[in-house]
Length: 144
Image (cartoon, rainbow, N blue to C red; front, side, top):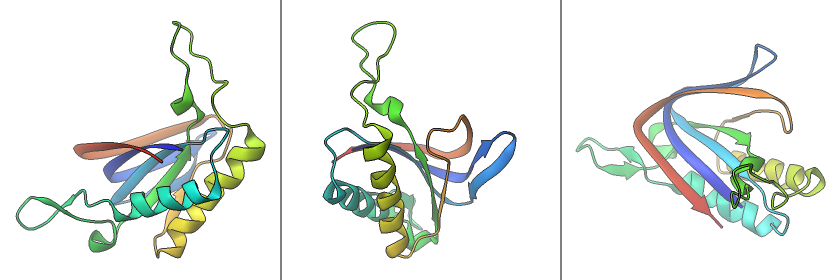
């Protein structure tokens, strides 16, 4: 499982020109699922994302996590994180098929909610437009 996590001042995802999910301060999480990923990995990813200390404290040091700033999560499925870029035209055979990816994407979001966070999301497989006002910018790559 792979994630690109960006600290944002706000973010939203639109489908067919309608807002599907929207947050203010928090994390935009682009989440990719591999074919061999497990529920345990989804749980571990949620733990990592929710615990990341990438928000600034009063001394402008990245010491605060999502809970400390009262932030939310916008989770967007992103199979392209498993792109095979050995040629100029990426292939996506290394990404999990929907029957594996959808339950793990949903489990990741559920685990974040269980940790007390509001979670907004895109729609798996939809053509989405993602907008964000990156803060910093701070962007972290995670893999579990």
